[in-house]
Each structure stands twice: as C-alpha cells, then as structure tokens.
Image 1: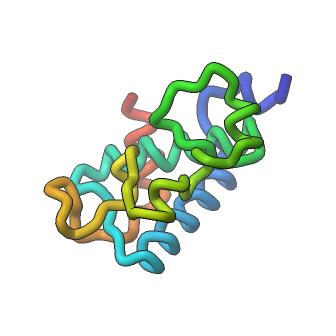
Image 2: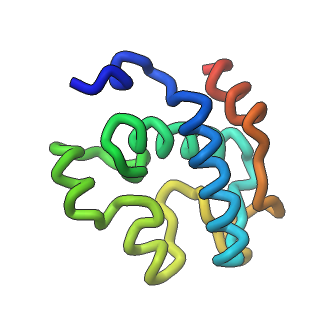
Length: 120
C-alpha cells in the first residue's frame, strides 16, 4: 500500500500541482470553474489525492471498482476523454460559458482550496 493512502488529504505540493494544472487547462480551453468555489476546491483536492495515491489524476467524481485498472485505461484520467473531445466535465471543474453553473474565474488560490478541505 502507498503510504500516501494513509493520509486522507493530498500533500500541499500535489495540491499546488493540480491547482496549477487546473488553472492552465481552464485558460487553454476557454472554460471556467464552477460559480461555487467549494466545488472547484473539492475536485482539485480529489485529483491531487488520486495523483498522489495512483500516479494519475483520475476523475474523483466517479465510482470505480478498480481504480488502478481505470488509471491504466486512461479514459477517466483528467482531463478525461469526454472533456477533451466535447468539453463535458462531469465534475463541473471545467465549464463552458453556456453552462448555468459556470463562474467567471479560471483561478483559485491554494489557501481557498485548503480552507474548503479543512472545513469539511
């Protein structure tokens, strides 16, 4: 078992890496974070935890019978195939402007993510 699996939270280093990835990807694709920043924070935390535990940012918003097999298949590794092909993000992390839940931001601070995580 990976020692990181014993810690329920992602490390600050991995959290920062996934935050940076998410901001860069949103800007590159012209998508926006959810109007509710807690949704963005929880998804980024989940991506970071999966990256730490599994070696890949597996979509945290789905149930998997075998996470390791899903990582190898790569379909749900963020950005997942539906996002890359059709800009459809099940997690509501990357939203197009026509989505009712799309906010106006493509950035979120590490502090905001940690505040949401610590408040859970």
